[in-house]
Image (cartoon, rainbow, N blue to C red; front, side):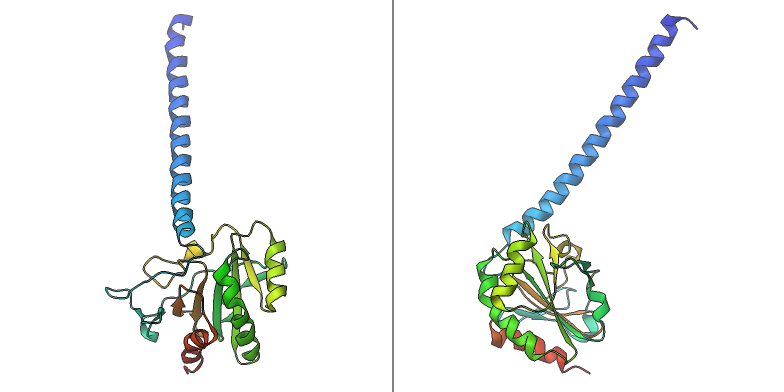
Amino acid sequence: MSAASRAPQRSNRAAQSSYRAARAVRARRRAALAAGAAAATLLLTACGDGGTSGGGGDTGFVTGTDGISTVPAGKRVAAPDLSGKTLEGEQLDVGDYKGKVVVLNVWGSWCNPCRAEAKYFAKVSKEYEGKDVQFVGINTRDGSTTAALAFEKDFGITYPSLYDPTGKLMLRFEKGTLNPQAIPSTLVLDREGRVAARSLTALDEERLRKMLEPVVAEK
């Protein structure tokens, strides 16, 4: 084969290689944009006074005038995998607490409403120790664990918190369910690991108990 006949083949191979590279770049850009959009959604609802979310359709949950959403036992959805390292660097899997009622609180040390509710979580969590109730925090948007650990010390938080600086754990919840959409958010899981109640606002002691006590009372 002459050099002249080989030249077009080399040119075609080069063009195909460039095309594949361009496709790979576009795919990476689409993935980055999708992740950015999800993060932006969370950012818009970060550390506010909360949002409103109604039931209806096939969502199965109802939001009361107090902003607390609840789901009857027969329509509850299991919480996703919520596992990882705690602020102290230890491994934790929320799924290991099945058989207990779990209170999940999404918070950040930089969040003023989180600071406002922290003393109530510290108090109620201590009162429920040894009563088959487990409190777990999900710390998010803190660039390091230093400020988050100082927050826990300041407010007397003794239960563990998963360290989730980029909000990946929050994105594991299915849309249309009682997913955490704001910071702070609080979820109560029943003994089977299903989401029974949610609040998208900071809680005082009365509202925290109002979320927790009916689920604890279930048999």
